[in-house]
Image (cartoon, rainbow, N blue to C red; front, side, top):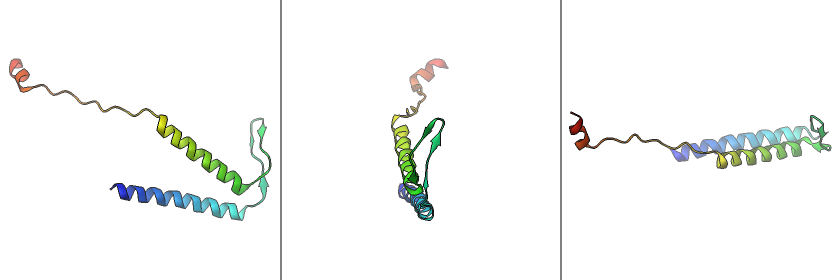
Length: 87
Protein backbone atom coordinates (compact mmCIF):
# COMPACT_ATOMS: atom_id res chain seq x y z
CA UNK A 1 0.00 0.00 0.00
CA UNK A 2 2.82 2.40 0.84
CA UNK A 3 4.49 1.71 -2.53
CA UNK A 4 1.27 2.60 -4.36
CA UNK A 5 1.00 5.85 -2.40
CA UNK A 6 4.58 6.80 -3.24
CA UNK A 7 3.95 5.99 -6.92
CA UNK A 8 0.87 8.22 -7.03
CA UNK A 9 2.75 11.08 -5.34
CA UNK A 10 5.63 10.73 -7.80
CA UNK A 11 3.23 10.77 -10.76
CA UNK A 12 1.46 13.90 -9.50
CA UNK A 13 4.75 15.74 -8.93
CA UNK A 14 6.01 14.66 -12.35
CA UNK A 15 2.82 15.86 -14.04
CA UNK A 16 3.11 19.28 -12.33
CA UNK A 17 6.75 19.62 -13.31
CA UNK A 18 5.99 18.64 -16.91
CA UNK A 19 3.16 21.18 -17.06
CA UNK A 20 5.47 23.87 -15.67
CA UNK A 21 8.18 23.06 -18.22
CA UNK A 22 5.71 23.16 -21.13
CA UNK A 23 4.26 26.46 -19.96
CA UNK A 24 7.74 27.91 -19.48
CA UNK A 25 8.91 26.92 -22.96
CA UNK A 26 5.87 28.50 -24.58
CA UNK A 27 6.17 31.78 -22.61
CA UNK A 28 9.68 33.21 -22.69
CA UNK A 29 8.70 36.88 -22.47
CA UNK A 30 9.93 38.69 -19.36
CA UNK A 31 7.32 39.60 -16.77
CA UNK A 32 7.41 41.46 -13.46
CA UNK A 33 5.53 40.38 -10.36
CA UNK A 34 3.57 43.07 -8.49
CA UNK A 35 2.24 42.64 -4.94
CA UNK A 36 0.83 45.65 -3.10
CA UNK A 37 3.67 48.20 -3.23
CA UNK A 38 6.40 45.70 -4.19
CA UNK A 39 7.48 44.95 -7.74
CA UNK A 40 10.11 42.47 -8.89
CA UNK A 41 12.56 42.90 -11.71
CA UNK A 42 11.68 41.55 -15.16
CA UNK A 43 12.14 37.78 -15.14
CA UNK A 44 11.26 35.10 -17.69
CA UNK A 45 8.04 33.24 -16.90
CA UNK A 46 9.91 29.94 -16.53
CA UNK A 47 12.27 31.31 -13.91
CA UNK A 48 9.42 32.96 -12.02
CA UNK A 49 7.42 29.72 -12.03
CA UNK A 50 10.43 27.75 -10.85
CA UNK A 51 11.05 30.16 -7.97
CA UNK A 52 7.39 30.07 -6.93
CA UNK A 53 7.29 26.27 -7.13
CA UNK A 54 10.45 25.88 -5.06
CA UNK A 55 9.19 28.39 -2.49
CA UNK A 56 5.88 26.54 -2.23
CA UNK A 57 7.59 23.18 -1.81
CA UNK A 58 9.84 24.55 0.93
CA UNK A 59 6.93 26.19 2.76
CA UNK A 60 4.86 23.02 2.47
CA UNK A 61 7.70 20.95 3.89
CA UNK A 62 8.18 23.40 6.77
CA UNK A 63 4.48 23.33 7.60
CA UNK A 64 4.60 19.55 7.67
CA UNK A 65 7.60 19.60 10.01
CA UNK A 66 6.31 22.20 12.46
CA UNK A 67 2.63 21.19 12.48
CA UNK A 68 1.79 19.51 15.79
CA UNK A 69 0.60 15.96 15.35
CA UNK A 70 -2.55 14.90 17.17
CA UNK A 71 -1.96 12.49 19.98
CA UNK A 72 -3.96 9.31 20.01
CA UNK A 73 -6.07 9.08 23.11
CA UNK A 74 -6.67 5.57 24.26
CA UNK A 75 -9.47 4.97 26.70
CA UNK A 76 -8.18 2.98 29.66
CA UNK A 77 -10.06 -0.26 30.09
CA UNK A 78 -10.87 -1.28 33.64
CA UNK A 79 -9.45 -4.48 34.97
CA UNK A 80 -11.74 -7.43 35.60
CA UNK A 81 -11.38 -7.09 39.36
CA UNK A 82 -12.72 -3.54 39.19
CA UNK A 83 -15.74 -4.74 37.23
CA UNK A 84 -16.54 -7.32 39.90
CA UNK A 85 -16.52 -4.57 42.54
CA UNK A 86 -19.06 -2.55 40.54
CA UNK A 87 -21.59 -5.40 40.33
